[in-house]
Each structure stands twice: as C-alpha cells, then as structure tokens.
Length: 184
Image (cartoon, rainbow, N blue to C red; front, top):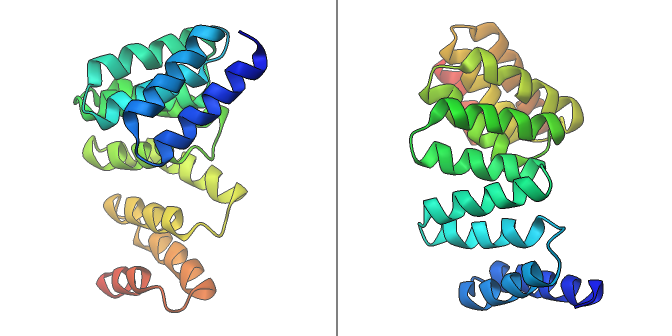
C-alpha cells in the first residue's frame, strides 16, 4: 500500500471517529496501521476507540504500541489518561508531565495534571504547567480559572485573586470567576 493509501485510511478513520462511528473508524485505522507501521497515529486512533468502549487494557497496549513507533505528546497523554482512570495517579502524572514537556498545549494532559493535582494533592507540581501554558495562550480562561483553584487549595488566596481579576478584566460576565471571587 502506498503512503497515499495510508493517509486516506487514517483521515477516514479520524472522520468516522469524530462522527462517533466507532466500528467504521476502527476498520479504517486498522487498514492504515496495516499499510504503514511507521506512524503512531492509527494506533492512537484505535486506542481512542478502545477508551470510548471502556476497554482500558486494550487502549493501554495500543498507546504503548504508538509510543514505541514514536513517543509523542499524544502517546504520553493517552497512557496517562488510562493510568488516571485506573487509579495509577503517580504514573499518570509522570506521563502527563512528559506530554506537556513536548507540547504545552495538549489539553488532555493539562486537564489530567489539574485533576491529579487536586486528587493526589500535587498542586505545587501542577501549577508550573498551567503557568507555562498561560504564557503561550493567556486568553484561555478555563486554564486560568483552574490555576486560581489550585492556588486556593494551597492557601495562596492573593495569587488566586490575581488570576480571577485577569479573567474578569477580559470577560466581566464570567460567572464562574465572579462566584469564586466572592467565595474568597
């Protein structure tokens, strides 16, 4: 199979996955994986399908296979996601960190870091990732709001207020930020 066949099958897999047609997506991802074993994307797609079906063991092995082909932020984030869902917080935090070191804008990894930061009380370790993200995309209010939440949990209310004020300066109608500000 040619590289063009690989690209077409991968794109069709992505389209069907986006539309929620898991069986069709799986068929095309398998064709893409079979045609060209040098790209991680089909395995990431197949892993995503497995996650949506709740098949975490299968998803983990597919993420690992993608990772062996090429370690990317998506493979790190995928493995972290499975580890987080199966209560392996420390391993998940490590994989999310690796993903964010490659691509600070990987939202799966970023929200995973936030969640584990709260659940495993690793707020201080999570904060630098959010700060680094906000240097790249300062308008992302959900991330700034999450950063404020981490600061509150760490009893750093002044820093939390500073973040919330930045949100409200750009978006005065932001209800979540107004509510959190009133609680402080």
